[in-house]
Length: 409
Image 1 (cartoon, rainbow, N blue to C red):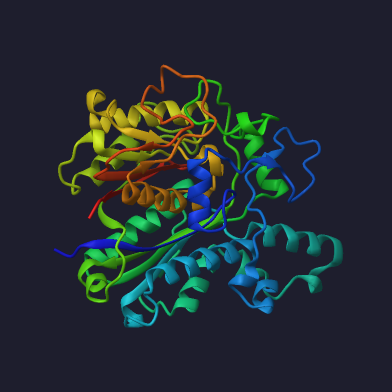
Image 2: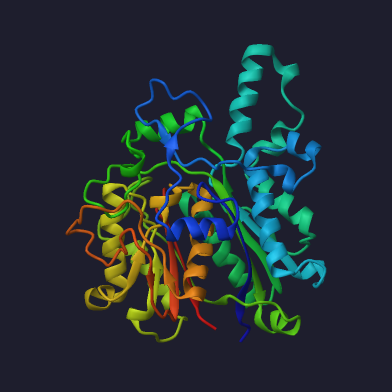
């Protein structure tokens, strides 16, 4: 049986433009939520977002490449470059044995909005020749593959908020079943534009709080919607013997993956939490035995009233109420906001760090307990505790559920 391990991590988020900066901010209970600056939100009910700050794409790309690329691709390139450098994989593997599954829930939405404006205001001749390659959802996957020479399997998996969890899980399967020896797996999103914010407001998904400290508050009884985030994250997965032979640093082992669909509603989760519970159970089915008190779950935890309540049910369905009460749980969306297609990969990076450093990051902003969300959600302060296993869970619009399980090694 082939084994799959994590050998590289990268991240660009609203609380840090690299992995260590992000981790430090998370443990300090900081969040990246502030008034929207990417456009004038006057007249919008929701005016807050978790924007990436002080990001310099020139650290990772040439100036001409930056001009020709959407922000979502710039985020993806940065996260993948960090993960590649961390792993030391590039140049040590047959290019045909390394692949890239890099997801985006929406793709180059900034480009779509900008080019539509050009078309309307200035006519068709003013539309950029790079419009299509920036709008397409697979631009991040293709660009990362080109830059890292990934000639193996390469895909963009678009399953809304579960996109990059599915990218990670399917990358795990690609190595497990022998289709590749290493994979770049991640996700990127850059959708803080008027039409997206207005759309999420009008489907009653966003928090309309004017207080950044009380906007993204997962599992808190006063939660009232999610806060849009942006950024990217990437993990390098590798077959264990290959990683060991080249002396790679190994963070942990990937030991399970679950993927299900609620088949219930295009936005609302199954009210009984069956689909999410089944995804967790699938991931656990190959994870082996472990003590729930030594397990961490990075929950989807969007801060919407329905999601957090039903996710609690899903966790209890999978573990049983008694064992669920022993778990260490948190939602880091209290800090990063909801990064949509990049959320799963970002939270997987955080999950790997938690497991490898025996530290549970907190749920930022939590104040008011909710009896319907009665798990140990690690409010505001990190917990240092021995961990043997960890799971990263994502639940997306369309009823898409994904869960990846990790074990200490």
